[in-house]
Amino acid sequence: MRDGDYNAGSVIDVRGLSKSYRNGAVTADVLKGVDLHVDAGEFVAIMGASGSGKSTLLNLLGFLDRPDAGSYRFQGADLSQASDDTLSALRNRKIGFVFQQFHLLQRVNALRNVMLPLLYAEDAQGDDEVRAASALEAVGLSHRAHHRPGELSGGEQQRVAIARALVNDPAVLLADEPTGNLDAKSAGEILDIFARLHAAGRTIVLVTHDEQVAARADRTMRLVDGRIASAPGTRPISPANP
Figure 1 (spheres, rainbow, N blue to C red):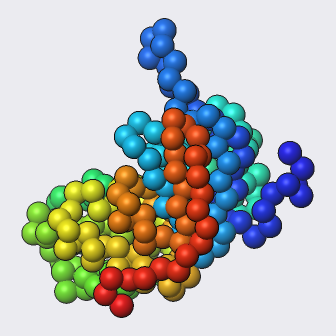
Figure 2: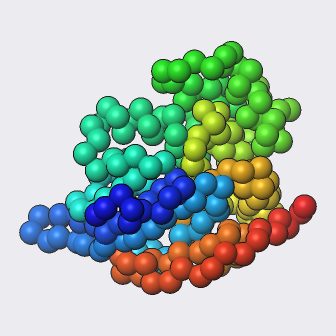
């Protein structure tokens, strides 16, 4: 594919992305030639039923796995032949992850959990504790900085996870069913945080099966049987609690 075929200014631009998994003699084709671009500052929701391939796609976008076929450009750089070390460095510096399961260390407090990505950062940008405290403040959790996860509600734990994803100032925030384990009130609060982050210029790609969650995004992509089935146009975000 020629350079001119790509979308200028896209943070993420993938073409013909395919991924299969083998279980004994059986091969499952999870992704079947996905094309997707995400522009800087855009909030994109990827919808699909269980097994449609949306989490697999998110893992590929975040360099947690490699595709079997297809091309991937990130901030204009072709990563198709990138080494594992290059992808690992990009993942730590450029991608922030938020998962349905919070993946917090239970033995350390919120502040220390948020600081964890900084331990692997090659380009130190200042005092780690100050940066972690600033990230917690951005999600409204400064007052719980010295509490361990077991002392926090589910919504508060997800806020810590979002702060951890933000602490390295990533180019893209990837969220996989971030409200899936939360009650309606907490889920709404988490979506309001994403809305504020987006309004401040963050690029967000969020996987969900929930229409109400997807409605908060600029644009919705639908995965059906490993393929993009639809990509409705852009619409403005409307926080529930502006």
